[in-house]
Length: 117
Image 1 (cartoon, helix red, strand yellow):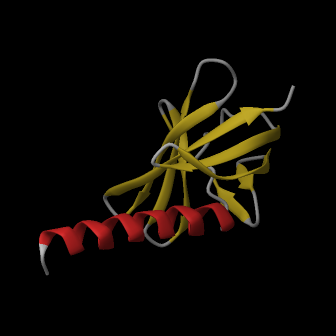
Image 2 (image 1 turned 30 degrees about the vertical axis):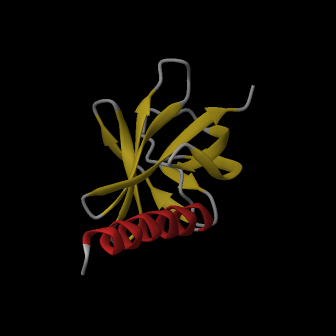
């Protein structure tokens, strides 16, 4: 496949995965240290907001369209939204979380959780 076509395929796949992640709960991983409550989840790809919606942390689960276990890490945590799609949430130091969204080993976007005040 010629290189220009490859770039288009990769870019299209990345956007598709990010959009899919948004619909299936693309808010990145939070850790067990994430305070229970309501957050605004924002999914981005190439700096463009794909989706903004309410998210909740209940116990050790991130609740969006479904419930996703939060796996703690030293800086926050991660959530596996579906096979091959992981979002990482690192503490932003202000009660929120931000991090990359992966499909396999490829970064396809970003996620933020901003606490409702």
